Amino acid sequence: MPPVKYVSMDGKIVPYDQGTVHVMSPAFRYGAVVFEGIRFYWSDSRKDLLLFRLREHLVRMLFSMKIMRFDHDLTVARMEAGILEVIRRNELRETGHIRLFAYVDGEGEQSSQSPIRWAITAIPMPRRARVDSGVRCGISSWQRINDNAMPPRAKVAANYNNGRMAMVQGKLDGFDNVILLTQHGHISESPGSCFFMIRNGIPVTPAVTDSILESITRETLIQLFAEGLGMKVVERSIDRTEVYCAEEAFFCGSGQEVVPILSVDHHAVGTGAIGETTRKLQKLYFDVVTGASSPHPEWITPVYAK
Ligand code: PMP
Image: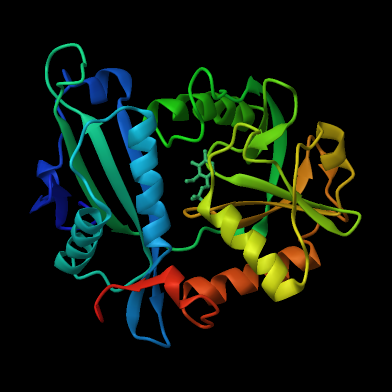
């Protein structure tokens, strides 16, 4: 059973089963696909679905395509209209997730003339259990890709094979999630989320030059730390053993949300339970995304009211 009735292909609504790409396309052969993952939340207070930081995701989509030299005619307005349409046509009224793709199609080797197509899916996706339970993670022996080989700043499907190898290995080793180190041996990020720790009372997150995706959730939390908790986040390189000594740590991402880290390489983080500040930040984040509080109305795009 498909999760929804429709998907959007090149701006047109089609039945879910027609959301296909040919095996000969560079998208399939080489992972020549740029994408975004965006959440929308059911808001009890507004009786509407709220897309979180849609504009920022669409701007990142454009710069990922720029880095990848995708020659296209997509705009923020076209992508936004496509996203709203696919949610509305599926009549979704529960928390879920958008995937927006742009990909290289055609049969031959890819060139600047290869057609760029685009697609959107919208499916229900509730909060995952690990947001409440936390995760035990390990430092991967796989190194994070770097800017001069496969730029992590661009959200490109092929990049995710790096995270996949690390995650499959990490699961075999008994961990729930993994942290990859940069080519210089500093903390980078997990396969699908960014990293924060609290050390000596100060929140710290790797710098954007530490081979991370420039995460929208990371930026949101930097603001919520300051505005909601009066704590200034330091963006700098982090050594592996600093994490072993941290009081609290968590992962963050649009899909993953805010996931507490209980241990790293079997070292308990703090007491080994979910930290107090992490819990406060989770509450601030969930209140903002579900519209229970609205410190930044510009972060929210209502689906049905608009
Ligand atoms: N890093 C990677 C590799 C990711 O895939 C994601 C999820 N998009 C993130 C970090 C978090 O980014 P964002 O907060 O923008 O979703």
